[in-house]
Length: 203
Image 1 (cartoon, one colour):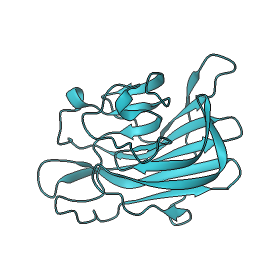
Image 2 (spheres, rainbow, N blue to C red):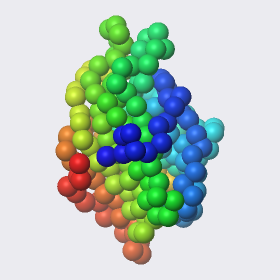
Image 3 (tube, rainbow, N blue to C red):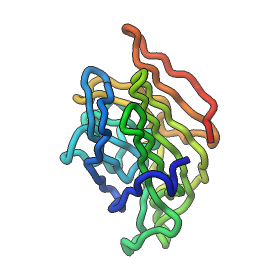
Image 4 (cartoon, rainbow, N blue to C red):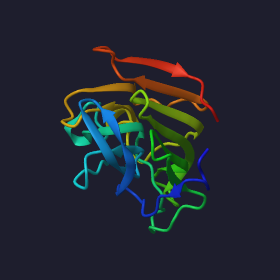
C-alpha cells in the first residue's frame, strides 16, 4: 500500500496521461531497458513517450494503438466527472526505491458512465515492476462493478502487456473484469518462454 507514502500523480483526468516519471534505475521490458514511464488515466503505464494516449475502443493486445504498455485494467476509467471536476476520493501514486522496484497504484478510480454524474464503480489496483528478475505483477484490491458508457464486449476491457512495436504481447483478460483480491505475475522468459501465474496479493 503506497497511498500517502509514494508520490501523488497529479493531472490525470479523462482519456489522458501524465509523465514522464523517473525510475532512477533500468527496467528490462522485452528487448529494451527503460528508466522513465508515463501513466494513463485508463489503467495503463507505458515506456513509449509523450505521443501515446489510449482511449476507447480498447483493442485486443498486442495492438499498435497501445504499444509498449503495461495494462492492468485497460478500460474507460476517469478521474473527473462530466464537468471536469475531480471525482471525490480518487488518486494515483507511484513509489520507487530507486534501485530495483516500482509500484504504481490507482486508488478508488471509477468507470466513465453515461448517466450523471458520469462515473460509477471503484477500482483499486497496483502495478509492481521488479528489476531483480524483470517481473511484472498486477494486484487487484478493490473492484466495484459498473456499466461503462461504451459496449464492453465491442470496445473492450483488457489486461496484459505488449512490446514497443505493438506486435508482440500477452493478453490475460479480454472483455472481462479481474477479481478483487487477486493478482497476476509475469515472469521474464528464461530463455524463450513466458509463464503467467496467479499469485496471492500482499494487501
